[in-house]
Image 1 (cartoon, helix red, strand yellow):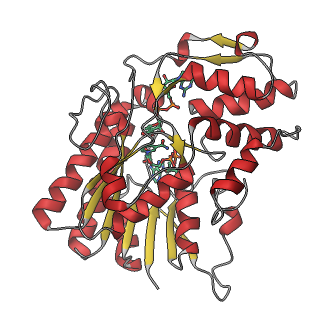
Image 2: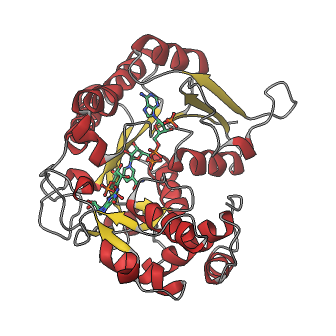
Image 3: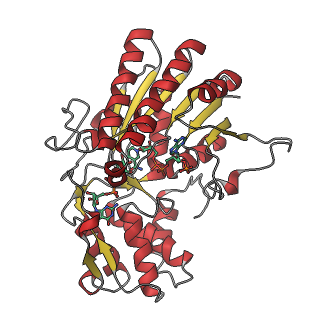
Length: 347
Ligand code: NDP
Ligand code: GDR
């Protein structure tokens, strides 16, 4: 049985990836942070008592800022594959806590790579690199595009990206970068823009809130569907050689378009509910991201199925249902039609 270790298992991607790997028969280990409240909501449904016969998901306390514990976990588990997804992942927040972001999102990767180099150079390593690294680079962006990072988060991710490449070349490690463009789902953190919108709509329709306060509506992103993106992560580590891959849909839409699509799906107009609050603007912004994932299509056989309008419907349905509201159901239909082999649980 293959063993995988996931950092960031309690996050959006970590939770989907854990489900995918369990589905594929892996033993899955995840690093979680100690918190005063439960932070395992996204993986509760797949967790069973480790004493149970057949349990294949195991959690370990650790923090990316703690070198010793990170090394201990790797030494004790001896995984075949490490998926490094843990990070301070919020771009806006990285302007408020740049040093912490550099430590966790940047140096955290070096701590893992060092432990890996000392333990066993055969362990495969996946780094969650980001389209934010392209920043102000001219779109469309692919593996050969220059990097022009525009935030402390992007700088930290770029540092990690280069460390992965250097450890691959210098120590012959199987270490790959997945350069993933934005990907969303009903499990997306509530302060990222797509989820903020779909959750906000459900709050407005249930009478809990009157308005949705937003930042820059002109920014354009290439938004995909998270379960498809974690499958790409797995494929990257099954490739015959370590390499770097862009994962994206190739379509771009503005935040305003996301708002229009989501409000019109529930029969409303965004102008009646959306207000601008300057606190959501960033000191430096990434204006346009459009990914060119043709290398991943060719070499990994990876292609996304969920379109922008599908994604909006899937997310609105999920937040309406969670708020106890009537659901239009187009999102459910899309999931049923496009994923006959759906391996993740309902949200
Ligand atoms: P989330 O923010 O949902 O999850 C981040 C995870 O990292 C959580 O499990 C969090 O734990 C954990 N974490 C944060 N700080 C630490 C720390 N100091 N020590 C240990 N663990 C920590 O991110 P996503 O799932 O959306 O993204 C996964 C990765 O992919 C991240 O690295 C992100 O930067 C990157 N990425 C994401 C993209 C996207 O569109 N989603 C696109 C490209 C890259 P806790 O639950 O306790 O907070
Ligand atoms: P991003 O995602 O910064 O691309 O990083 P986010 O959803 O936070 O922002 C996308 C765009 O929307 C604009 N925006 C707002 N954003 C937020 N969060 N809240 C608002 O109210 C708002 N109004 C407008 C932003 O300015 C931005 O242009 C995400 C994270 O998951 C990273 O970890 C990951 O690496 C990248 O995607 C790819």
